[in-house]
Image 1 (tube, rainbow, N blue to C red):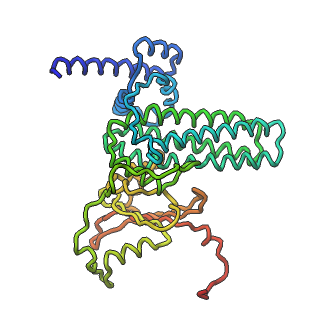
Image 2: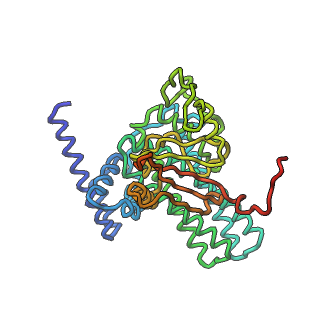
Image 3: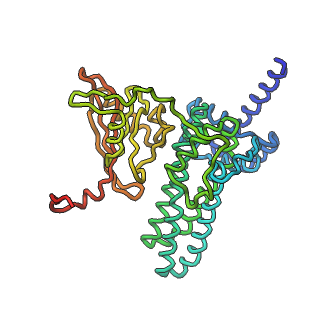
Length: 408
């Protein structure tokens, strides 16, 4: 391509960016949405997911917070819906059972079906609130809540690779909306549990709208955006982490096996890896140490002095909080939802400044009563080395009574 043609293409891209940004800013300033749609159709046949990504990134660069973009991103979706350019086509590989793209779309169909079932039961329940209908409604809400795994996989796997390719703004915006949807589902469930039926229908419709809009964003914005960048190694890593985080409502009919025998994200370990590691109070082989750490009734994570996630243990059973291998080497703040990032940043700043040495929280999450402890690790001379996090299910501990001194 000649320099002149590249320049013309660049100029056309920038021209479209100026118009796009102007339309979105006017939406943010509460101008009439229908008028904006008319002008959008005058200027654009379609826009690509890439153009949307660049526009949002530039808005954030000009000082507009991710939360503000998040607040009106449903209006954006309404504006772009049906106009997103199909910049990719599914390969035969991505149509295979178990491939992350197919899993995401199949789960979205299951989520839509779950919403339909809830809507039908609610329609029967509101005029005649019988106990059996309430029980069925709460059961369906339990099923819908598996959307938490769908979002967690996106947040802890997809977003990691999006950041790797420089797509920083969309994950922040989308994660914030995911959390809002979680709160809407919890809020609707609370209304049903407490028989606050006068506002239940309105709450359901808002919840349903937001969930369905997120499905549009995932399939018509996120997937076209990442498709040109994600390679097979990325998809394999996401598929492996899907197994760890879990599936939403349905499981694939088969495990995805790409056209190669194996995949490893780590380099070959040195031959002397099993030699003893010496400590002040004894010595262990690497394998012994790893087994000890993985057998702890705790989830352990270490973030180094540069705020990079360096290690986590891999215990048996269900994970209390999502952790995946792709988090290794990632800045810790990006491993938390937007609303939590300022809290984590302030805590680590206090650790580094010597204002705190530890912090302990306890709360209910994901069906467990959790205690999370953060500890500043310091060298012998007091130099900050990093933050050590432990997560423990304390539900059974809180309920302990008396003593047990017998080994059965």
